[in-house]
Length: 459
Image 1 (spheres, rainbow, N blue to C red):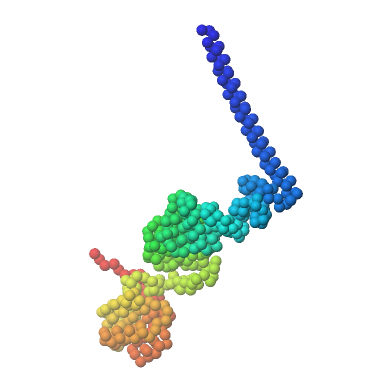
Image 2: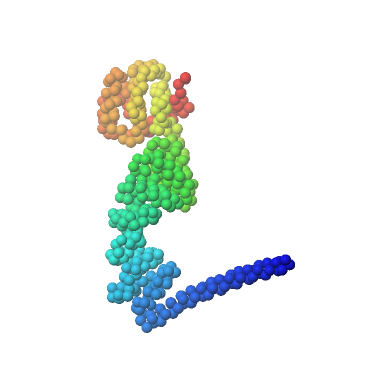
């Protein structure tokens, strides 16, 4: 019995020694293999250079070096060797013409030599039209050259060979989008995103597709998801805000544009467009001060951008004159309240009773009033026109017809713009006074601002 523990100890030690020897043997074998690989590479280079020293266009030497550098992804060296092999391909049966053109094109593409890559892939495709790698790369290059129809043909063939290749699906979808084939583009792009969800550019294009096929809510959801993205965010905010602007959702549009403006490193054209559109949205909300801030920023960067100079000139005056702002921009109720105040104070020492008010599509308001002064009494009609441009004869003729309908003895037509010469000639022999911008501005300055807002009706 006393021998058993000794035997067990001997067995355990034997096992440990065997394991250690095995590990050491593998370690030595790995080192030898690494040495063999290094030795093998050196041997390939040595043998190839020896052949090329005797003949610089030796096919075997060039192919040996080309294959080595291609496998190592040393693209500049691979490109040099395959350039020579491509030139020799037609005259040497030892050269695989398809393979050298494919590898030449691949190396050229990796180095950014697009024209050379296109040439190589085109030659390779003439030799093997059904090769996936050739069809995908050539399709991608056709897309870059904006030959979208040709790109679609090549990429569809590549997709039939590998339906799950995300880059093929992506490029195919973007090509279809460029040709405004939005529903077809959506199918490819959605599948590409399923395979490669980190592709934010394709997600943006998918949102554009949804917008183009009138699926606006889906488009807004995607743009909203992309708003924080440091690369696609500014463009997504611009597109989303524009959609909301078109739907008269001005507060949402402002939020979109302001988020976009908080990004860093915004492209100059996107930055200017964001500022212009947020200024436009603020004007729609009658927040003129905020709008002017953005417009002046644009003018400092690009003085001739769109109609910025005109808008600044127009709205600086409005910002300084609240009554003028109400006259031109306020809701109809506030505009009419201001017009009533003008009528009630237009004649001094007069008793005035307003008998009728009518509004025409928020373009002008007609107010009929009984006026009683110490010297005369009459029925007077006032027309307040919100147009800032030139007011022609037709509007004045319409006003005169209205005067006759209500049997008013006098008419007063006020506008922030100017009246055309024809309009002025028409009123020369008629009891109509034309009040243009300068005189109207003086009248507006006398009106109490606090009394120009419409008073809500009591419930």
